[in-house]
Image 1 (cartoon, helix red, strand yellow):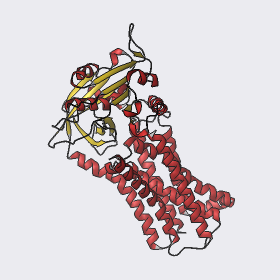
Image 2 (cartoon, rainbow over the protein chains, first blue to last red):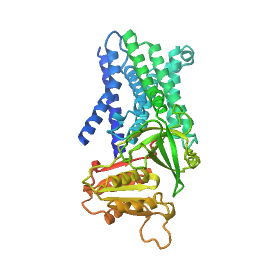
Image 3 (tube, chains in turn yellow, green):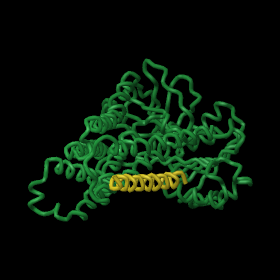
Image 4 (cartoon, rainbow over the protein chains, first blue to last red):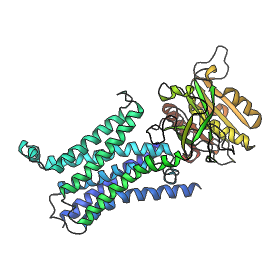
Length: 31
Length: 440
C-alpha cells in the first residue's frame, strides 16, 4: 500500500512537471 | 510523532519539486532569445525538468536518514525506480517532439553538420536508455549485482553530465552567465550527493570498523554473522531496521548489501547480528566468512520498527523476512515488554524454520504466540498449511482487527497479498508497516 502511495506520488510529480512545462512554453510564446 | 513524520514527508516533497521547477522557471528571467513555437518550447522545458529529475536521483539514493525516515528506505527506492522512468520519458520526449516539429533535423546533411552539443544530447539519451534497460532487466540479462551497480552509477553520471554539456553548448537559454552558473552549480550539487554516499560515508565507515566475532549456522541454509565494533561504541538502532554490510574489500567499493539486524536493539555493547540466507549470489559466501574478518556497517536505516506499546503486534514473516521480526521479539523480551505479540511465520518445511529453537525459548519471556504456516508440511502436521491469508488472521487474532499493528516482511507476492487482505479487513494503512527486503 505504501508502494501504491509512492506510485501515486510519481504520477502526481510527473503531472505537475508536465503542467509546469506547458505553462513555461505558454508564457514563452505569450512573450 | 506520526503527524510530524507526515509533515516532514510533505516538506521534502515540496523541496523535491522546487529543485526541479525553480531552475526551469529561472530560465524565464534575464535575457533570452525570441520564443519559437509552442511545441519546441514545451519540449525544451521537458528536457530541462527531466534532467533535473535525473540529477535528483543521486539525492534519493544518498541515504540521508532525515529524508528517508518518514517514508521508509524501500519506498524511497521504489520511488527512485518509478520516477526514473518518468524522468527518462521526459528526456526522451524532448528530441522526439523536436523531430516531430522539425523532421528536417533527421536529414543526412543536418545530421553531419550537427553541432558538438547535439552529440552530447545523443550520448545522454543513449546512457539513460541503457541505464533503464539494465535496471529493469538486470536479472533476465544475468548481470551480476556488483557489475550492474557500477555501470548504473557510470551511466547515470554520463547521462547527467552529457545532458548539461548539451544545454550549455546549445546555449539557447543559458546565454546569461548566471544561468550557466546555476545549471553547472546544480550539476556539481548532484555529483556532490553521489560523492557523499561514495566517498564521505565510506571515510566515516573506515574509521568505525567491525570484526566478525561469531559465525553461527542457522536452520534453512542461513547464517548469522555476529559483529563487534572495533575501537568505537557502535551505533544504536531500533528493532526492525537494517544496515548496509561491506564484507570484503574497503567501504569505498560498490559492495554494500542491505540486511536487517536480527539481534536485540537493547544490547549495550554495540554488537549487532545479521542473519543471511544463501540465495545463490553473494550470500553463498557468507558461511565461509572467517571469525575475525574486518567488516564495515552503514546504518541504521528504515522506518520499519515496533509501534504503539498499547497495541497487539502482529508480525507476519515469509521465509528470511523473519529477521527484522526476530530483532523486534528479542528487543521486546529484553525490555520485559508486556504487549501481546503474534508471529505468523510462513516457511517451506518444518526443518528449515530459521530461529525455531530461539523463538520457542523466547515464548517464556514474552506474551508471544507463534503460528507456523508450512507450505510443505510433514506427515501428521496439524498446524496451518499453505500460505498466510486473511482466514488465518481470523483464526488466530482477536477482533477488532483494526486495533492491532501489523508488520509484514517477506517476498513481494506474499506482501502484496497480505496488504490486500488487510485492506479488505478494514485495517487502516497507518496500522500496517511493510519492509520489502528485495528493494535494491
